Length: 90
Image 1: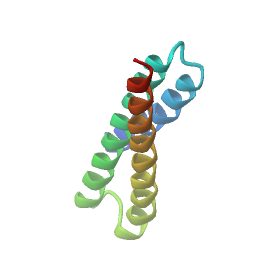
Image 2 (image 1 turned 180 degrees about the horizontal axis):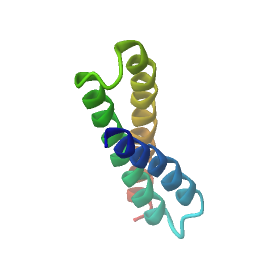
Image 3 (image 1 turned 135 degrees about the vertical axis):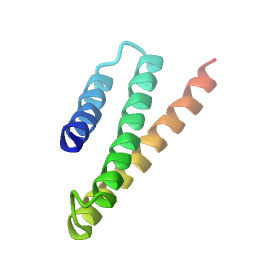
């Protein structure tokens, strides 16, 4: 169950970023990146849950969680920058 949830959220991140590469507009790009950010946050939640329930050990958890947090920071920066740029265009 947990492994299926994390697989779904992890693969959604990549798919949404790929979709954003060919967005129809800047607003569409922002929308897709926002959803990717939400999926990354969800992935972080599932990882924490997997660790706390003993599904994965700390040694497995730490590097994956660290990379997930990096992805969250990158996506948050992209979303923030895109919002700023869209406001400038208004």
